[in-house]
Structure formats: structure tokens, C-alpha cells
Image 1 (cartoon, helix red, strand yellow):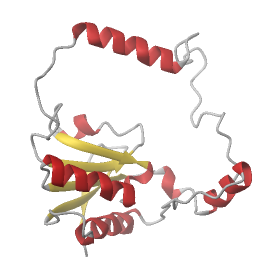
Image 2 (image 1 turned 90 degrees about the vertical axis):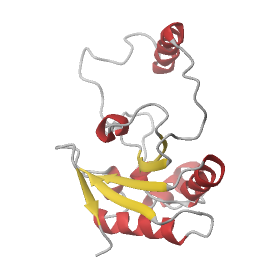
Image 3 (image 1 turned 180 degrees about the vertical axis):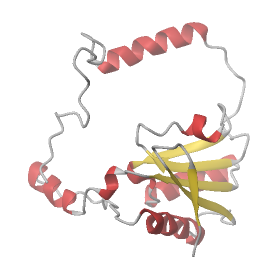
Length: 185
């Protein structure tokens, strides 16, 4: 598998290039300027109102707040490739729980995930391209239900997490928008 960072995964349709002439970051900064003009400080703290942390895939098709009926300030959202529980996810959850009061963890993977299409060979390909092997694992998977179970187990057994009683895992269907809960079997 060769890595081509310059090619977009899903190129825009003809005539719909992002930002016409402006680089995407410039578009985002301009959107922020317009947002700030209407912004009113909500006066809330960093601790989430619902005391929940949601760990999910970074896939752009997942609009977690809409899908879960969440509002600004309701939860901590931790996203990465695959929504897998890694050491860095545990770091974020430990801070979320111990410093900011979350008590529940919701894990969300999704159908048609790109992490099901690559392998750990990605690290080797990257090493050949840049001359240095990544220290991190790809965390690719083929069985999505089993990977959710593995992520739940990593949360439940982490010595760094104070609250592991309310940990639930789900698979989000990108075609229907529905969550399917994964149990421990």
C-alpha cells in the first residue's frame, strides 16, 4: 500500500472544489471570524454537563452531537482513527474523569470504517517513505464488534480510570444513522 498524502481520499465533484480559490484553512479562519461576530460566551465551565465522555472515530460522516442529541457542553468528545482505545485515549479519559468529573464512557465505532481496509503494514509503508518507523500501532481491525469489545475491555481494566462501571460500546450504521449496542457476549 503506497501512501499519497497529496491525493484527497474523496476528491470533490467537478465545480465544487473547496473554497474555490481560497485554501481550506483560510476558509475556516474566515468562518470563525463570522462566528465570533455573533458569539456570546455561554458562561459554562470545562466539565461536561452530562458527565460523559464519548470516544468515536474521526470519520467525517459521524455528526456525533446530532446523532446522540447532544448540545454544546454536554460531553467530552475524543476522536481518533477507528475510535479505538489507545494509550492517548486513556490519557484523555483519565483527565476527563479525574480532573473534570465524567463518570460514563460511550464508545462508538461505525460501519464501513477505513480502519477495516488497512493493516499494520501501513507502518512499514510509512517507514519506507519517511525513513522512520512510527512508534504507534495502526490499530486496524476486521471484526468491528470484537474491536468495540476490546476497546471496552481496555477502558474497564485501565488502572488510570476511576470510573469504569458505566462503559458501553456501539456501532453506528453510516447508512441508517442507528446505533447498535455491542455486549460482551
